[in-house]
Length: 324
Image (cartoon, rainbow, N blue to C red; front, side):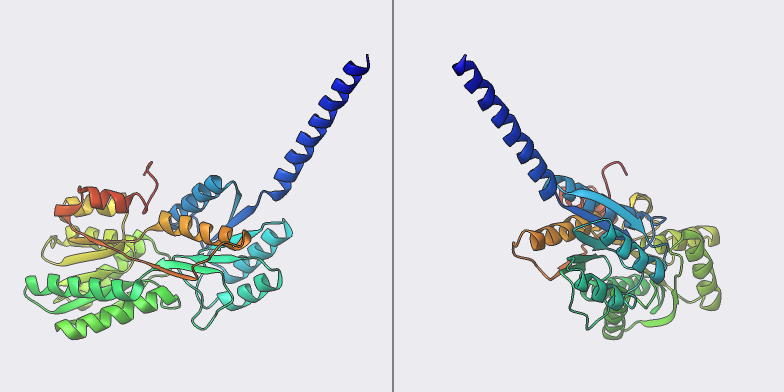
């Protein structure tokens, strides 16, 4: 009887230890919040896919918020996330200029934060990591490519459909492009900034640009929808191929346009990859592992003749989810 009692006690003790271990494991499980500026834009959905994918791989829980392109909503989201007990944040900010109060608050709460796609306002240092494209070098490379497209078509005047210039990534793109235009002998005759990042807006702006400057020979698209909108305008005007287009970011839509030679080049930005890498950096901060503060990912140029290569496919796997 005593042996049976001892056996039962051992079993009970084992069960209790297992339960305690389970509770301890649950308590150790971390949560990462993804704050998107807007989830109406595919790019930010894809960053979120990367955050969620990496969180699952690391054993973290995932929650997401959208800031609806409002700095006030962005701040509310950060406070809500902290109140709900998240351990870390990955953010695509509404703008770089909106980040100082956000960073001050998260520092006061000891919450690690990684930026994805858009970095903090220049001069800010109280962040864990910033995972962006190498926007300046990409701006130079894309500027040179666009200038070459213009010259191939008999001119040197180019137009630009730009991201909002209150974003540090857009400022770096523009600086690089302007340097390339000056070095290569092209003139940027007009730049129009997007507000909504929609194809319809890009169509309107491209139409306005070509009406004001019919001698434009190439268009620099700083974001994916700009390339789609510009291609639509050229098709409507019967100018496909006669005016060159290069675009940054990349999507199934612009890949199809590239294959159809409606655009001539895509500088791919790794949206999924930025989400993955940003999540890893905040996880490293939580676990006292080494952190890389500033990661500037290369944006490789892919042209129609290279789109089906193994190298291009490896890049595209970090741009948007496989289901797309």
